[in-house]
Image (cartoon, rainbow, N blue to C red; front, side):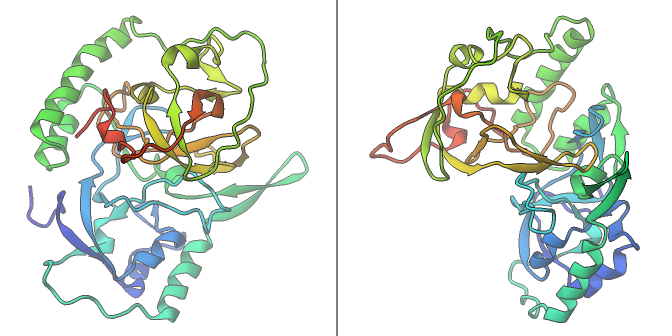
Length: 337
């Protein structure tokens, strides 16, 4: 691998607004990936490369995994939705190598970013974030972000091509042990999926009628325990849903664990068409509880770490313990790196 290619652990500095503007087209994108207004505040600052974006799950067409070229993820930098209608998905941000420079940790820091340069970058990238479309005589708001544009900004990876899996280890994204665990699981479960021996519904439920669950009105910072799989199944339809919300396979290992409520989720952008979805029923995210990329069929090694959405009826409020609250990585059964 070339020494110019960024790897996990490299220290980088986000280039200045004027340098990034030089890379962007009229839509505020580079290689079809938008530089979003929410990213401008990171210009001039230093971060550690968390990993290369080698295998990214497709949440638009559900085609499997994709690879955006020359792209990395930095620390746990996430979109705050401030320029996208207050979207609360908190997606991880993708960074083109052209927007970064590798630096030595002891090198002098960049000069402060000038306000007028930052405004120019925000103005350019804000222009493509929102548009109005007309349908059946009505005007509808549509949003554009990195998540909605990933299919255009990436190439599809063939499920059985070993090279994309090997790159996860060769680039330093994952340890050898983690690489062996996940590839072994994929080698067993993907053929079973093709044969129809892996059920599509991860947790079939027993509820056949709509029932009102007592609201908890959970707030950020409160401590909750995830109920058992059996308790959660009692709230789901046979299709594994509760009021339209899917209970995902990646959520299973967190059953029985104790976590802090991160936020109440009221609106998120639908990555498939850019609509803003207003949540009609209560929904929360939990601190550190994200998709691991280690359990999902056809999405192996995905680093997007998407926050799982939880119905309150899948949780119970608990009193704060005297000791520390276990981190998600401490919970039994949660896949590690």
